[in-house]
Length: 343
Image (cartoon, rainbow, N blue to C red; front, side, top):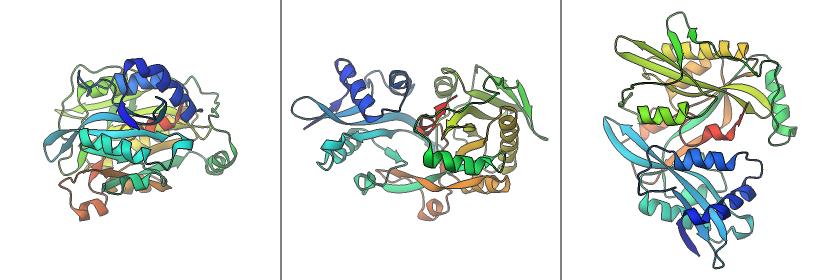
């Protein structure tokens, strides 16, 4: 058994392995180019950070991707890595391949975060520390949308796509709440790179991150608010969720203390969802302040949480973690957005 980083001469075998692993995943090549090659936090010497496990015959039997990120916590900045697409071929499971991939990852790439670990993979991360969790919240435009989502979740085939008379919806250039006006932009000339909320761990939203994550691909709608040196933004996209059309609140950056600001963003998203003919709004929340605002705005929390684990401790108290006051993460962190189909 051998574990090594993906190299150019292994691309063909790697893409074939991924096609076998994820038969319902479209655009494997495009996703790889975006996620694994274009990441602005990759160093020149890194190359694609994908670990591959080989058996003696040179056959790929497992993989683990690593996304380099920059984290902020209490004014300090540090490089970290988020794991994604841990997969071992079915006939080679139970041989310690997954454990070996995780072990090799944390030997060189640390701090290492694992997010949304499945029940079957949880034992691989038994030595990791819990630092928080993320919940999916949904708002339904009509009462009939909830049973429709349940029915599709139970009976629909994977990869089913939604249809809508408003599939060519054009997002407005300006959107407003009673107290805040946001402008749709297709690029940014400058943007401050700073720790938005000092007492929680959050990932960098530098200009190069925003340009890569939201402006280099079609579909994202970036709305920004600026006033007297202050700024905030939110990003939406129309996605397919269990064959239904939803507006995804992909990313948002505000001060956690301004929950009224967040409720304004939710109000705007509801309006956009109605105009675009969506069944509702979907997003991820990692902090109790956002949880409360979502409940007040009639969002429903999905039953399964996505735990956030790390291989080395952070200066966060157990009380802070238990109260869900330790993290500010969104759908744009890790690879959550990729689990939805684009419309």
